[in-house]
Length: 207
Image (cartoon, rainbow, N blue to C red; front, side):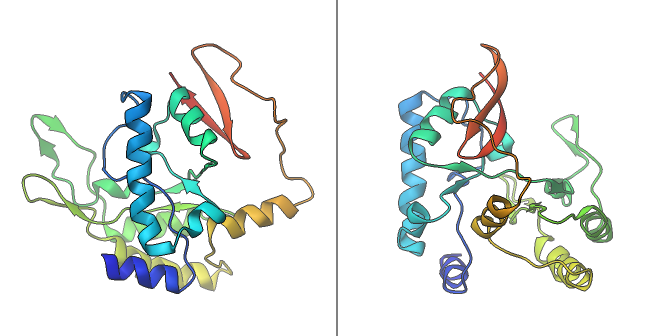
């Protein structure tokens, strides 16, 4: 994995912050959450030479879950949020249909994910796919990402799409004549739920 990360940076890719563990962070005390952020920052800095702090400084919340205290901590550290609009629910592609008495979503074939991504892609789309991992039972989850990309990317290229970094996408949006701009003073409209801004990207939060 270390070699792949170094190769990605060498080839011009950005490394975004997605935390160090696949878990929820909303229930952590503020100081503990910041410590987790800093731990992953140090890991990323080993590969990108600290470029993340100088360029996009992108952060994607695990499970797309974010609280107001997390927003405040991340905003104070200069992060911009990265979400995605092109998601085929690939996390379940290798999932057993039954685990602990709870039925999981029906696994989909590679054909399904490829067709979904090609059909739903739009200019400016951010695609979400997950790297493979094994759970505590040794079961492989999300093991088809490379196969999905190998088939989907050429088809997307044939439609005129190009892959780019988040910072390049943000720069293009900044130059767009009708890009949405939120006032710097814009904050959550209700005390419990609402929308906050992190960098220039609006996002949904819950306490």
